[in-house]
Image 1 (cartoon, chains in turn blue, purple):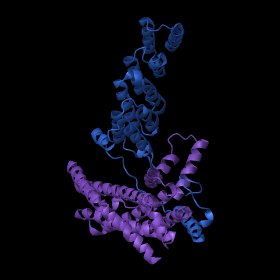
Image 2 (tube, one colour):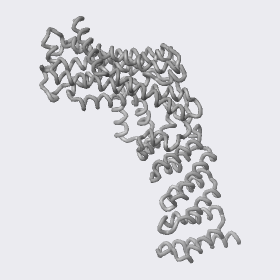
Image 3 (cartoon, each protein chain N blue to C red):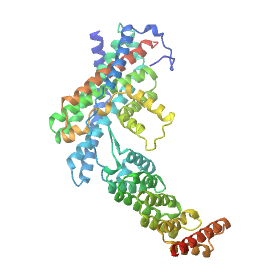
Image 4 (cartoon, rainbow over the protein chains, first blue to last red):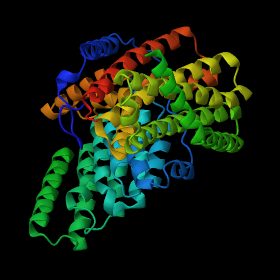
Length: 245
Length: 256
């Protein structure tokens, strides 16, 4: 609606007939009224569809792999919020969810969004079987590029230890970080998570062996790191002797 | 008044005929039909449903954009050729000019909608196709009125057609956009988030609910009745009144 000059001369507003003003106001009021009383459509929960092939997505997105990956991730993220319904993660089919996350990864392998979603969001489900599936997905992706994806494994360890209360799983994941990353790829705190989990499990001897191995390996250049681990070793030794007594 | 409206409508319709609009639509129709058959052949199961979905979606989008583009270019040409000034130099009221143009384009929309509905009859029963066709006509009426209004406002083909496309996409996606904005994964509760939600709600009030128009589910599963079409018609009437008065507002202010 032109209230100002737009490329051309316009006449005064007084030239507009009253009937136009009347119908303009009427139309506006009717539109607002109509929208306000919009009836909610019947609620239907739809299941996550099976994934198409990567090539199909590429055809439909005109080979915009990155954009389609981002779009699919947003769609997947919003899937649990269907019109008028908020689905719990428990209602989602996690096998399909993982295949969608895999597809998104195929389209954009550098994206970290699927791993964040897998390790932080979809593990919020109160179902350990589903959580385990997500953690397996995170582990699988970590093993493909350990140097870049170790941080998602630390989230996975947190979930296994504190949410699932599964120390064996947490230990297995922590061991994978130590075994698959070098000192240049992941910080020490991440590579030493195994020690703390062993301590929590009461496997003090194993923890001592790993700390001793780390100290002897010569990997630790930082004197503070060495001091911290030596202190930790002494504490564990003390705990073990207390246990034996 | 009656005479001038029908005369302008008649010549608008004739212009569409001479512009070979039907020919373009026919080519589009054949391409969409061929494409849907090809995609259907790729399927392992639900071939018919896939074909119907592909055909109806592609035809709907094609006809909406073709009609939007035709209305925009037709009015621009009339402005450039001074046809608009010529008509108004006769004893023709401005609203007659507008109504004549709208009527001509709407007549065109009815014929094109019927034309694109015909191939659907090969796979879908008559009743769902009839409802789908009526809904498509309503959708095109809104697009016609919108394209005319945008032209009167912007006087520029690029601005006008972009506005039509943006409006159409927003109207189709508004429900989804609101849903995503109201349910973010991270509950930030920031002022900007609340502000964006208010703005989106405000925009939604002014947009027609085009995602309830011309639904593919009507054709694929035959789930359609008069109760589905009634809101479509009411929304069309309301929105035509609104768009027409906005267009007339600008038309009456236009300096010859």
